[in-house]
Image (cartoon, rainbow, N blue to C red; front, side, top):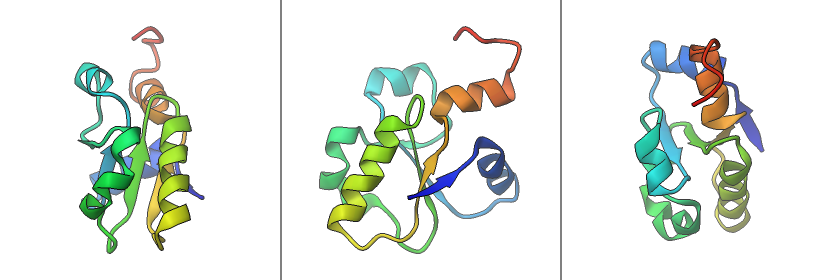
Length: 105
């Protein structure tokens, strides 16, 4: 499985690189805080595979990186995706990177 750090993702976004962000959390989690990804909850990822691009990196994220890893494992187990990345540490790592003085969110 391919992984991407918050720092690497931030650099790609700042450089204007083409990629797709997928949030696999639940709607209430996405509404509370997200980093701009399209919401496709974990239990709906397989059914919505047609929304995933194959010609650019697709970065999956969740709260800490477990559900996003499951999503990638499920997709790669059934389909020939080669461009899926897991955001290491999820949105908690993102919050820590951008707001290190605010540990409670």
